[in-house]
Length: 378
Image 1: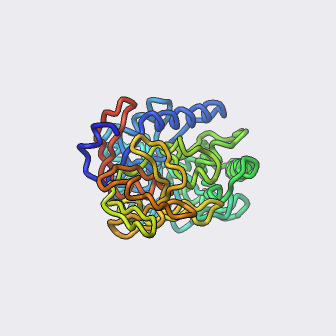
Image 2: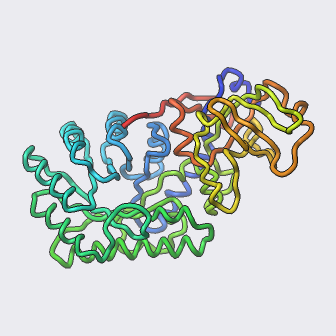
Image 3: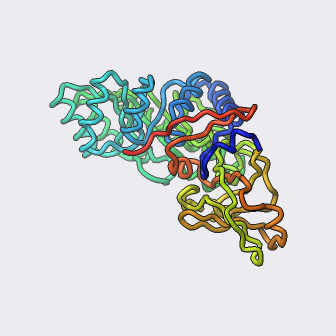
């Protein structure tokens, strides 16, 4: 174990910097190969240092999921920000304040009501908001389907209302339910075709549509062709996680986020190891339980990050985690994992686990540590 870990209280969120940089470069190379700009989603890390590494690799602007993130990233020097959650009318004053401070903030909507609220507020405050219309290309969540007449209605309300109809945006979130390259590539093409078709319909109606923005981590990595697309987005790729491993877009040894924990006891007759990282550290996300391999609350690794084959976090209370060997109980857990042993747990969902912590410990290859703050709140 690196001596620097001795100074850390546990549980602690660790970022393996070499793995993170590898992931950043892999995705940026993918976007470059496909000929589109890359706008990473910062909701996974919510960390200025991580985003600066993404920008240094070639990212152009960022995506956020809260306006508080936009505030904090703007304060950290990031100007080009897309708030990719449907704009609620009560948040328009916050969006206005960001733009008045000099933030190049773009917002989204998927309804006539939402578009009208943006246009009315913008006119009342002499502000021209750039707006993307959200497109539903896979029935996963929100958005307007590419062929819905509503698309043109929303576009006209924004354009005639004096706002900048910046383009269209989609997110094929159902990609998380797939697990083969063929299926992911097919969904990536469905995502592309649907969003491009929506853009073509707006243009054919005489409405502007400069931006065609698509992406999820799985479809971004498996897309073979992004003709007609201008921008690619992805978020969890920067750390990856066990859900993404099950989807098939990363290996376990590419997961950059883990939770450092300490052994605090045993239930030897059950083959259990008790640690001080419960669901308050790992989160309650059990996303892998719906996939082909259930990893419980996470995969157990040695302090150096090497996976301890067969060991999982099988249970979690608020501040207690239960580790055990998958399948048969290990009768030697007390001697194999003495009280005080440090271990790492790889999470199911990096976004959910990361948000449990106010800061990260960024681990360099030489074992040195840097403390990076993480943004919180809405």
